[in-house]
Length: 180
Image (tube, rainbow, N blue to C red; front, side, top):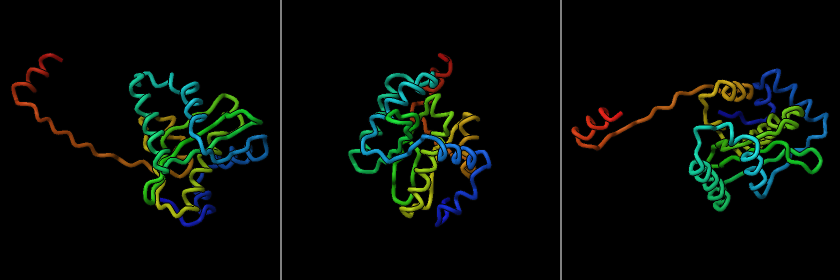
């Protein structure tokens, strides 16, 4: 849940997050909103997609299509962190009612050193508050490193419930279990 003022949200940031934001502000990093999400997608493909071994080409294509659809509908928000003309960090978000959902982002090695991802996430959170959003959704992660990064911005863990309903006949379910 987001407070009414950006300053209140900054109080929830970890000491490390505040330090990284100060480092980025003192350095050559400039964060700006992007009208085209393509540079963020390219950065993600080049820097992060390989780390997700469980994602197949079709999964990446679907993710890219979600980004393009949200952009076409005017609900995508993108931020880029630049050192000179080089994009070193980027993030995309989907604005839905009063919630901003973090979709995907990436950071290069240079971006990590200058606090790039901290800065683009802060830009997204600040934009959400200024636009009257009540919630910022990090989207969750089973990866403890990513979940820890999210907590540095004041995120809290929430459990998601899943409902699964199998409409196969009983004999087909048994056959599937045997086959596995």
